[in-house]
Image (tube, rainbow, N blue to C red):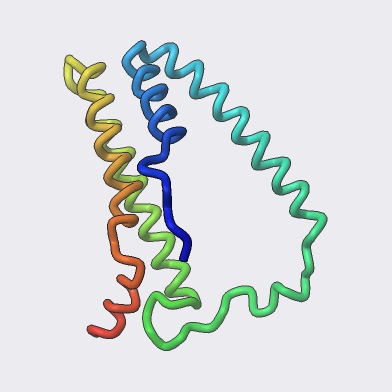
Length: 141
């Protein structure tokens, strides 16, 4: 293993500060920037899909869904449902927090804080698990 010389990720810190400053400036400016970013992201996705279409090998589609290993949630349809459930509840929770944050009279202050806290929790919580979490969990069952 190589040694790590970085103490922290400077670009990530700068982007976080820029996004926080944008949220503090106001909703209308944030909405404009958000619209521009969405257009850029959709364009990038379409370019990747178009470029990836050139490398499709239909022989690799069989089996399209790998058979279940015998444990619920590992491959097969139960694995698909497990993954979909995790994503669904994470983002439904985010939507609920955003909607709830809009209700109070002081929505401008409350919304930014609740949205940031919930997004940080949903995004970062899985990264706090040890690398072998699922292997350890499987051995305990």
